[in-house]
Every structure is written in C-alpha cells, then in structure tokens.
Amino acid sequence: MTPFALGILALMALLGAAWWFSRQKTASAARMVRIILGGGALLAGAIISLRGGVILGGPIGLFGMGLLGDVLRPGRSGSGGGRTASPPSASQSMSVAEAREILGVDADADAAAIRAAHRRLMKKLHPDTGEGSAALARQVQEARDLLLANLPG
Image: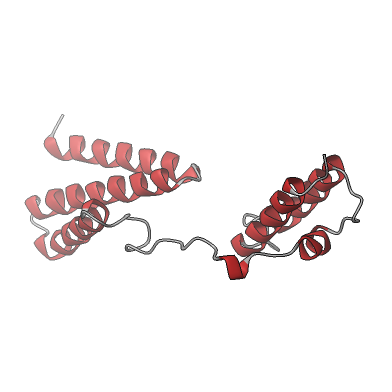
C-alpha cells in the first residue's frame, strides 16, 4: 500500500473518531474532537504538501497547528477559544415562586409532579429540538433542582 493510501486511511479513521466524540455531550469529548480534527488537518496538510500541493497543504496544516495549539496551550480549556462558562451568581438565582411558575406546578406539588413537569418541558425545550435552547433548558433544570431541594420532609 502506498504512503498516500495509508494517509487517506488515517484521515478517514481520524474523521470517524471525531464524529464519534462529537456525538458525546461532554466538555472532554469536545476537547477530543478539537485534538483529533487538529491532528487530522495537520496530517492532511503535510500529505498534500508532500504530494506537491504546498499552496493548499500549507494553510490546511497551519489550521491544524492552530487547533492543536489552542487546545493544548497550558491554562486554556480548549473549548471555544479559552472561553469558559461562568457559574451563576447569587443575584441570578430564582425564587421558589419563579421556579413553580417556570415548571407550571402548584405550591403543594410533590416530587413526582415536579419531575413530570420537568420532563414535559425538557422534551419541548431541549437544545436539540427546534423550539429549545441551552439557556431555556438550564433554566428549567435550575427550577426543578430548586423545587426538589425545597420540598418539605
């Protein structure tokens, strides 16, 4: 098998691994996707440059080096260019009444009713659905956690 064919097979394996990691919904999986894609771009740039396409291979390789450098740089998370989500401050927390209003439950709702309302809303507002967003899903999750924590008993 020629080195070019081996390089193509390696790139296909890298893309398959990146696809698999992209299906996982964790920060470490997102970091792995960036590492795999950066390595794949670096490898593709090197292969293309060695085959005589320096004009195309050079920028692809530089892009791969940039991805890897961003992810592997000390002190950076590698998820979105070093941006990290800030934890919610105390001023942003909601009251129990607001949480009941968000979930649409009564003041005397038990844990089962709260979980059912949460499940119903998450099916509608999940980020993967057309109507949902991550912010709305976090708000519904926070409301559920607050109400469950403040149940009597």
